[in-house]
Image: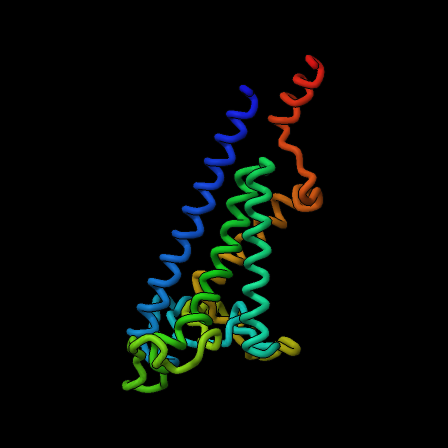
Length: 226
């Protein structure tokens, strides 16, 4: 009975951490997107530094503006993937996975949900953004926006043209080193995935068979007593 209480407390604490991360990322992500959507016209750029710009672009929903498959399929696929990862998050919390691992998974889920919200609702609540001084979008009555449910466009704004390749470099000469424009949700997904690969490869390979070292010793002691 005594060994169950600390484990339950740990699960509760990890669950709160995951929830706080997901909600915080969603709030920050949506605030940034709404400010850009309603305060900048499509293609407008604000120079922060020579290598960092706020550039308003929209895409159909893949990370960093990539467009490979159909919009509806992409939205449905994202819903399925998010559902799976939420189920996975609840399982790893209940199984006592490392808190750092749960944090990184939470960032990935939050980023995916943030972009999905754009696809689900932005087409319903905003008029379409356009180029030029009159291209600012505004909120409209629900359902009277520029696109139906699941067909909204994802708002991107962070652009880092770090440098331009010299003309003599084969294939990439004259091109900008880092061309993609992305948003806060994209960065959370990327940072979460990179952290998983760098620090938690062993945990990933163990799948759902991971055993918390702190609890395994307690379990073995209780088995010996029995």
